[in-house]
Image (cartoon, rainbow, N blue to C red; front, side):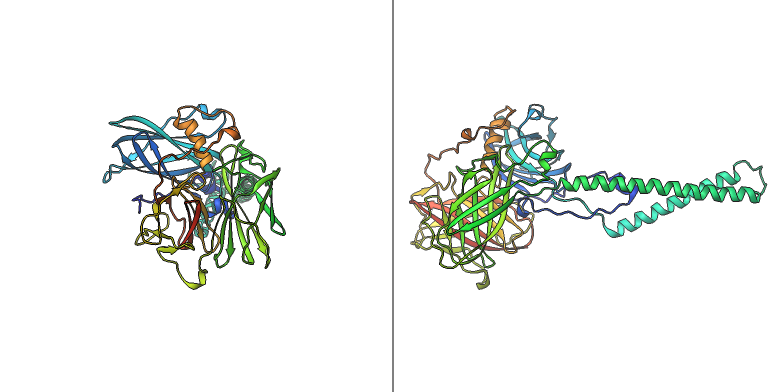
Length: 509
């Protein structure tokens, strides 16, 4: 199901006036934050109001985030939005809320913009009003500088020529002032005055050149300082001994959160769905084997997991973790599995899938599972990048009837991983959305509950909500593809104690 959300262009600004004056071209410094999928897609409830929220986060900090909300359920009359740090004293002092703008053609659709002034873990608080009363909801948003902005070459040349024109014009004005300022009307400057004007003009050019050089050097230092704060994921180094995989997580020396007062270490992780790390292991480049595992913490920055039997080959590793302040990130590495590795049986929360290789063509909207069950994707007719969707999947038995005995898998109706076939995008999402559940629970306890978390949450306090009502065989995942190209989608649902992994391919326009 496609959610009708229009695209909002973000307008990151960093000292644009200074760039104009100096005409300095900054080289881009691109980082792999959140593995290419930075925007947040979330479905939340504010009392009787149901909100499908899209937060298009900026690539530079400070920067402007675009907010899109589609409401359903009770009718909404108005909505405001407020950015608040997830933790710390600033969470007790939110800024003045910004009013969301209602679409003139669609009264259920709202748009707005928010400044995110520092890197770290934020929450966006929504205050919704209508005939059913006033209610609040909160969505966690990780903010990090992903790159420095570059100037187009043509614009740089144009500004450089204008700057040179200004310098020459300034030197000409100095020369004219020295030569002609004290002349009587109609008099002609003497040779001495002309020589003095030439010297003054040359001296002014030298002085202005020194000022421009000094400004450029200052700008380069400041730009280098900003580039040092560009998001750099923690390094994850795998070591394989037999079937025992050890993952050494190493903290980066230059973390943007440290500059903003929110440190990202390798020893401050919160449990998310009951585990400190969710590890996807995908065989590359054919993507014909996938495993969802849960390494355990054996020491500071050291995770370990016993691998199941796997076909040999190179595997990409994607490890999702959530820091103590609610900031999520995906750690990336690769490991080579040798032939004949004797693995261990999967535990009750592990999952695996063996889809057809990418080279055999596109997988369709129906995927037959090893036990005869069938997973079906209610695929949209067309899928475009930068568009928010609620992708719906159904689990059917071998007779084409809805699967029964449905159970939560890791506390949710299902899990999904959207992976681009060139390796530039990986997103592990849930039925509620793309935000980490640990961060969602922190946001619920602070923003939605009306309070603020001034300290850090206790690990033991982050308990997953339990599902008591019977579960449906249908699950939806809010998500929007960040770029065009081919993607492979892994969907996991559980019934009768069996975790099923369905696989689908999508060509995004």
